[in-house]
Length: 299
Image (cartoon, rainbow, N blue to C red; front, side, top):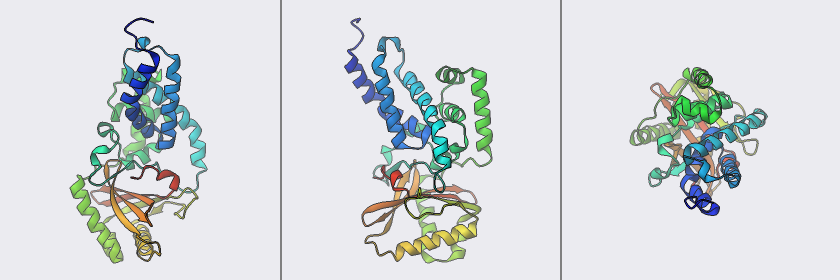
């Protein structure tokens, strides 16, 4: 081995320390699942044992390529599982406390809102990879073509299809956290009041509420569409929470995928993560993750 090539264990340890957090963020944004993302990152580092670091000019792009391609393989096999999922399938939320842990979200420069992560489920694995690499992470088409072993023209076609699928309903930029906090508090006051008309004032006419229980806990098995139905549903949920026999049932502000959201804590245990997608006309989407398997990242 040449003198300037580090000992195998040393370079693997160094790369793991330097890049693991970033790679976990990339895999999570590809898959919407921390469990699968962690498995992929571990798998990639196992595969690195057979490589010579002297043959790799730049570590991060090389590792990104391995992560994205492995994620596409997993996505292809995951599609059937998600089709057979009980009720709506929602991504696992990325959660930090508000406000003290705001600086601890995974990768600020590649942040993906929860609403956009949900909508990315419409994309094929290839479309999702190109969209993530180009629009979120800022890679050029030639670099993406090399990573995915496709032509540049093919990557541009995938991007065009991805944008068309997201164009009609792509979420708008969220309000700043202080403004979102104020809006959310006023919305919750309306919900706590139980006044249907007050709640309606905060909802988009075509508001939709998704609830993911995975067949393991009580949740709506179909999306609840329309402002009237959503208002009735969330007022009912809040009434149940207020009358809950569980000690210390409460609603806690959290940062979910870089935006203000809420967690429901019952008896000292997280039972729900709630993400809100705002629009100029009011709340467009409410996402409620209740599947306990997806709440492992809650702080």
